Length: 396
Image (tube, rainbow, N blue to C red; front, side):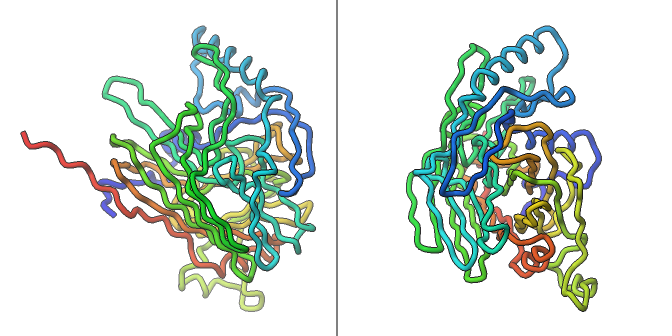
């Protein structure tokens, strides 16, 4: 990889720029809702009660607002739009769910929302409880991108292709409130333990089809581990700066996070493993801190933990990329709070027209005491840029 072309932001940096970059990836729509019990085959409609203000930040807004009269006027208009539409959020239709299973694990996708993962369960853990949050298209277990472009001297524009779809609550500049809508799936197939889909993602923020195509491939092995591969194809005609969440997981009942202290995928790490239990040292953050925590450099995996139900969703992350985690106090959820988020992100990339890149990772559901050993036995996650060539400049 050409370091000049694909320069990543240093995830260990404490600079304001890096903190802002991570914060850009943080804000999805959150609002109050009644708690619901849910499993993939029995989703119900959610009741909402408006937007949430927490410590001066509006969950769901992606930018900080300058306290001017104009900014406050726009903000108030957006809040009214949020309050008008939050109660109308509709969960992904259960009739469009498709489930694959192998061993104890099941993964459920929703074809109305870009074949996004709406549930991942293990029948031997917490009676098959699903904690993936499906409050709106910005949550779930999915991939998305942040693309930035603009001319010198002008404000940079951001678009956000998102697997699940368009947020649907933008109430300005003209007061128009748009409906939430899922990204179209143009092709898919399923076998008992395999799933394939081709998705045309909507822009989360502007509601138009993006110039990208996502190809999703998932296979569950006999041990009950799901192996994901996403391939991203750009049909853009311009060069853009890009950050990519690959993937992000929002989960309910999340009161802790866990990640390894050292990377289990490097041979040198075996000397640090407990000889009796075969475990690597891990860090358990309980109680879970609020989002966003400072970015950390991935050591191979991360997990959203529900300690009350003795349940965790563990997934591998490309070593060295930026991980983030935290909870959203007071946020509306599809089951029971706290709402937690983890993600791994490739930051500060340059995307040229025709770019192709991919990510491979594995995910499983296990009890917190067993999950670290099980996830450490998987192949490491891989982020790969397959094609990304700068366009040739015309001869003078």
